Amino acid sequence: MNSYFYLSIAIISEVIATTLLPATLGFTRILPTLGCVIGYASAFYFLSLATLNIPAAVAYAIWCGAGIVLIALVGAMRGNMPNMDTIFGIILIVIGVSLINMNAKPVC
Image (cartoon, rainbow, N blue to C red):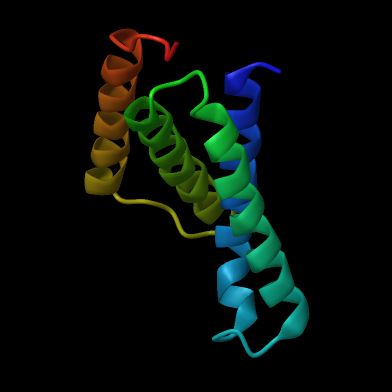
């Protein structure tokens, strides 16, 4: 399978797990806690598969950057609108991840 497909699954899994994190109430609620554990475990599993053909630094940068942007969007949809500094920071993250990805060489 395509490593970027695995990376996409890792990103989505991480975003779901992070979104569920507040609902765990300190890991005292079983269903959200299970969702977090499964989400983070699958995120790391698929991230490991992605690093078979994508350099680890590049895969991790994309994973983190996309996760931050998506979590900010989820927060905005829930009424937690980011301020201008946060928006500027997110733009810098997107630019940085793009630069890292443009110069990446595939792992052999």
